[in-house]
Amino acid sequence: MKFVFLYSAIGLGILLTTAADVFLKRSNGTNVQLIAIGLSLYALVALPVAFAFRLSTFGGLFLVWEGLYISGGLLTASIVFGEPLTTRRALALLLAILALVLSYDIH
Image (cartoon, rainbow, N blue to C red; front, side, top):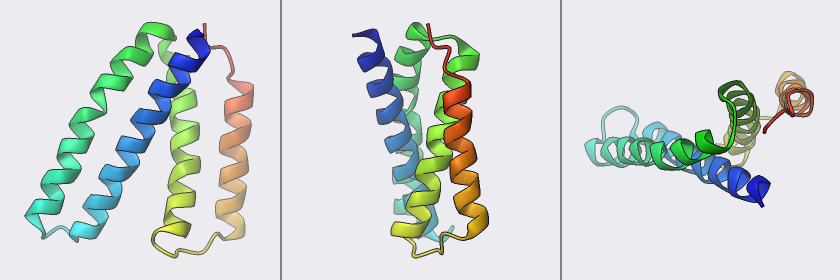
């Protein structure tokens, strides 16, 4: 059950972070409303992260978070912004997944 709560918190945090990134990208650095939404979403990330830290080690959480965030970011770039999934990006995605597998030490 701990696993479900931990990965739910991580998933929510990454979803909020990625949504914030999308709003900031779409703001083009000039739309104050979109910037404010992005900043607000970043602030909300603190809640699931604080919960996840109660269930995991710092290093374990950091590695899993970053691996999933990289994977999600690459997919978001391709799906939302139409950026090509190049060979290098696909390799980065595979390496991020490999990092997750190798770092599986969440307690």
